[in-house]
Amino acid sequence: MNIQTAAEAFALNEHLSHYPDEWDYNTIIDTIASGNYYDHIDVWQPFENDEPDEIVKNIDNTRLHFVHIVTELVTSNHAMLTA
Image (cartoon, rainbow, N blue to C red; front, side):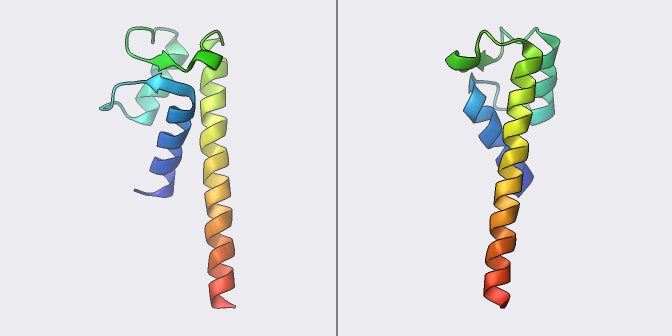
């Protein structure tokens, strides 16, 4: 699993309690953004009353933050190992 895939899974699992396993990140995000996600996706209770665009924004911000933190960690560890 690469960092991007891990970040997507982490972000989805932080905000959603259920989504189809066979759907990729973009399909899930597009479905939520459409507003017609209730039959396939369950938003975690603290976010269930948010508008679809806010849910998408929060999920994507979580994904980006995960990538940033992991990249910083990997870069920092690499620098320490090569110093």
